[in-house]
Length: 585
Image (cartoon, rainbow, N blue to C red; front, side):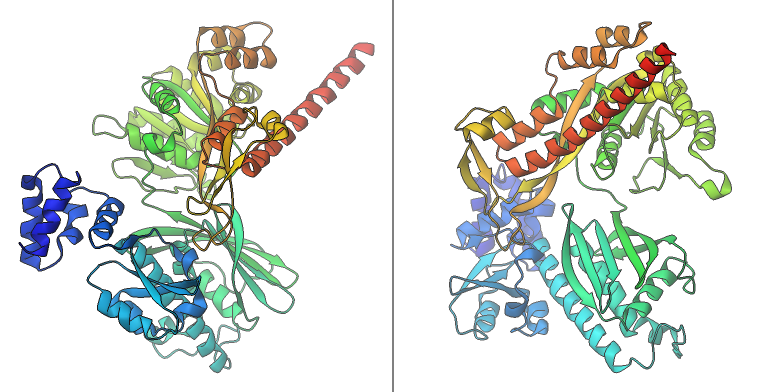
């Protein structure tokens, strides 16, 4: 029995494949191509790469690890030639407790690992990861090398480029291979590899700082010399069709690029400051994320509520929350669930952040007069079943959205409010009659984002009496706290998840809205007493109890909510004082 046959049998015995019949096609393809069975198993067997390589690691008596670019120790990596890392698909990522950690994506790479081990005095340990994870590490290493080399080359050729626009390139190839161009392009690639949402490039007094926003937090990435920066920002302006000579006024544009077969949009924003121009680049994966309703929901109850709202034949589903709370991701997840050949889905967005097959997407353009209102009027003549409006910003858009919902369309949109119930008052404040809000609203979802604890380094903690009172959980409940390791860049957190508060419309809420004396407090009280209603505070506490996030993140969530509530209370107090003064007069 050869190794591939043995692996096929083990995949069946371990339950990854149901029978040898399922393994035969994979086995035949592997033998034909002369590759290991496990390389083709994820694609041909419809299996997760992580579970495939975890099993292979056990069978070969290796350790399976999940890794990211955070794991990379630049000093350790630089001891090995980049050519060996790329061609051998083997990489030393760190030295911990006197042992070099070497990562491969195949148990047949032990010879390459031994060669890497010769560059170190310390003993080494070889661990297995997935090809995708290893690709990310290798891309980061090669990208960093290109960025450093580009900066060095620029310093050598500083006389050629000084931000004056006089490059004197003899051909297009000369321009593309220019150090500043290589540096600028590599920076985008590194940001994508590190799953950054934004790049901040900020000129300071004596240098230029580059930071990536990762999981909502700005992280220092590198520094650029003041002489290189004008050429770098000129490169981005050219790519975004901006005026490279204009440095006194803000400018906005867009760049589209493809990395590793995936298309990305980079939204460029420049803003003058005393030392030059600030540049912020927001990153969008135009193909969207792999988020589904199942992965979006934190509990089975939340999943049921999402699906219940999406089954509505018509009406408005509103998402609320501040900028950067993940509303757009949730909207696209809903569209993904609703998208099928039997419905016509039309979106109106500013801008279009993700491109989705089978959906008609429109981007507003205020310069040409294509506003949300104008676009919606035309869309209603396109026979849509479902309409997604990026944001209800004004009275006109609110009225058209409500009319569309009442006349048989399912409308998805967002508004900026603090909680789910306040969406009702926001629509009424925009001029929509309360009875129309009561008739059209299917439900409202408020959300925030909290950072998730790193699974590799989080540590147990028992809730104290004070913490129990603060969270509403039981004293002594086992929760987790952040520690920090190389995987999470020593932050203690890795990734983010949404916290939801959902209000589904029922007869009692509709009656309270449609009454002659509408009271927000009364409606809020009715909503809170709905069966299964979970507030943002309660949902956040549940994530703490489940070990998903920390009490510090919960504290941050509550502080934001408390500030919002105080502002709202101050506004109400001011309005009451004004009303009292009017009555006195």
